[in-house]
Image 1 (cartoon, each protein chain N blue to C red):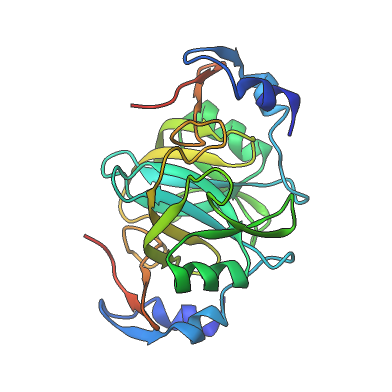
Image 2 (tube, rainbow over the protein chains, first blue to last red):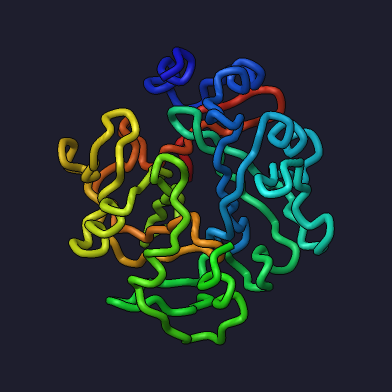
Length: 135
Length: 135
C-alpha cells in the first residue's frame, strides 16, 4: 500500500491532502485502469461499474460529466455521448487503498445500454438467475 | 459479449435461466477474477469493492457468508474470518455483460480494515481530498 493512503488510514475526520498527491498514488492496474462504481445520487441504487484511466478521472473531475475508459474501444468514453444518457457528478470518493473510485451521479435516463435503470438486473434465486429490474 | 448475456439483454422481467449456465459464462479477467461490490442492505451505502474467483463466488452462494479472493494473499478470503466483521448475503446480482457482481449484505461491524463503516472515506473537494466518513 502506498504511503499516503497508509498515512490516511488513521487520519481524523476532515483532514485534507492535495488532490494531486492522491492522484499520483492511485493504484491503476497493469492496463492503467481502476474500477469506478456509479451510484445514483437520487436513489442510492448502484447503476454500473466501468473503468477509468488517469485521463478519464481528470476529465470527470474537471468537467463534472462522467468520462470512463472503454476497454472494448480503447478510448475515452464520455458516458451518454451517443445515447444522451449522461452522468453528472455529484461526488467522487476514493477507497482506503486507492484502487477503486465511487461516483455519485445524477443519471439522465437509464444507465444500462439495455435501457434498464441499472446494469445489475440479473439476480440469483437459488439455482436460477432471474431478470429483475428492481424496485 | 457471451451469447447468454446477449440473449438476456432483451429478456422480459421475471425470465429465469439456470445459474450454472450463467456461472459458466461469467467473464473473469486474466487472473480469473471479477470485481464484487458490497452494498449495505440496511442503508444502501457502498461499503467496499473486492474480487472473487469462481470458488469464492460459489462459496458465497452456497454458504450465504461473503467470501472474496485476496489478491495480496492469493487465497480465499472469508470476510471477517479474523476481524469478525462478516458479511451476510441478502442478494447477489450480476451485471448485463457478466463481468461484475453486486452483493447486498448485512455487514457486521465496519466493512473497512480502518474500522470505518465504508472503505470510501476519501472525498474529492476541489483541489483537495478530505477524510469524510459519511453521514
